Length: 397
Image (cartoon, rainbow, N blue to C red; front, side, top):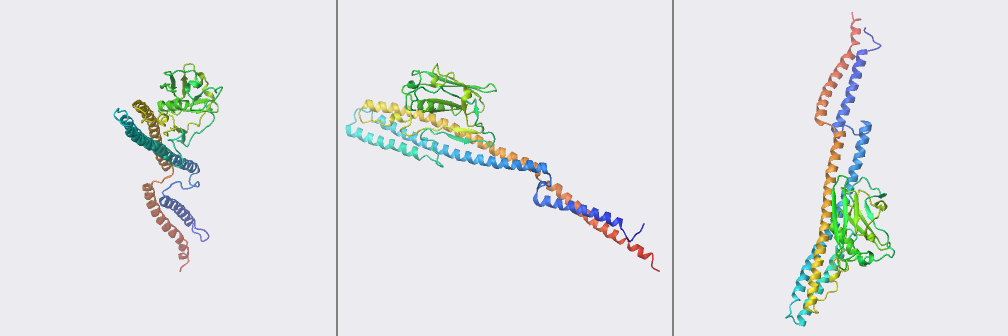
């Protein structure tokens, strides 16, 4: 039926053209932004997931920055330790030279002067080993590093062992024998057990004249970063925490010396949570337990004194190397975690892309199809608009 009041064909053509134009605009937006989900209007659920993961990527980046700073702190401490080791080698040479019987008093004094000058550089190097205000080469100060953006509970856990409080707390420079009923040569054993059945036993031998701080350092060194020990001289308590997440139980066999860890429940220990890693600090200064034995050594007194100094230097070199090995393993652990976080960030970014990125090849083909459809729709509308003109031809004479 022909009518001048309505044109149904034109209405249908117009609706089809409007729909095509809308689809064309959407495709053009996807191509221009590269996203199929650019806002919550496009797909609310997917947009929410993508935004949450973008926040996770930012958090991981912040953690990586923290690990990078911590790695720099460790690298500076390692460099200081290496320099101290080189000085110890030179001191060893001076001590060996001073053992010669044919030296005159003046010659011994000259060797002692060189010895003292070299020794003074140790404190200078240790105190200068700072990065961003942190120094792992002085004072046995540990560094807690955030290694994950997840976790972080500070509630009481079973991640370690805490000794009973001492009746009379002692300073860290006191002898271990004064704190506990032990003897030189006793072995303190630390048994780590994992839920998967993995086990590791670390033994620390008590040596003559070992201080409490020295014992704590020995535990940290022997455990290779898997256990971190610390001493609180206000309570006389020693705390051992598990650093390696592959282990979840720690038992200490101190041969009956409760002051060193026997028979103490693990549930009383609070840890920094599973998202932190503690880097053990050591004291490379002359007041630390590693080098305190050579702090006032005089090789000019006699051949015997030079021999004693030489032996003390050998012990110091051994302790220093153990400390550097521990610190090196912890630095490697930080590098591994940093590498993992880089891969994690890349994987999350890829996952976000899978959710929101547009397939440009598909969108390009769709664009061409819609452009042709738009042209055809415009022609159809033009034809439909001409239909009422046919009515006029019926009235021509």
